[in-house]
Length: 152
Image (cartoon, rainbow, N blue to C red; front, side):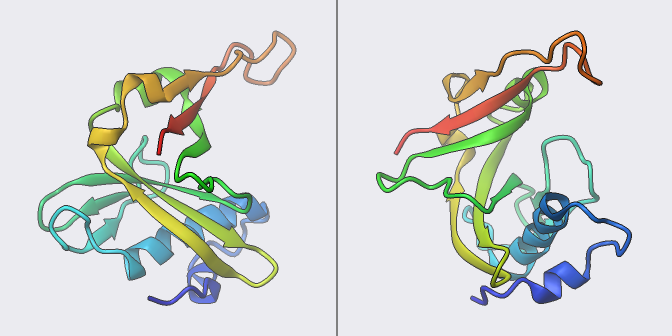
């Protein structure tokens, strides 16, 4: 398994400037090249950008996964995971439909440091924790995100 992200970064659109967006997409390409489906050992195909809550689908068993990339440590020493999720109600509606692939990377070295795959059976409604909705002066006022907490 290779941990280098340079090839994956080069696949991202050149007009993108925000590092978190570039690395998020690069980690999705990295997953496609380096991770096999945990359920059947099939190929995880990367889906089009902005598919709601799904980034990869197994070409064999059709199992679906969402990739979450972070430059900060999301896999705790006890094996638990805490990460920023997407829109609360959308994420909640997908519980039981997809697993998670968590990727920790270092932007200084352009390397994947760690990764962990969580099966959809381990992700319950209790794992999806709502965040405070955005205030009335925000550009997306009322929008409510979530955290995803997966116990060890």
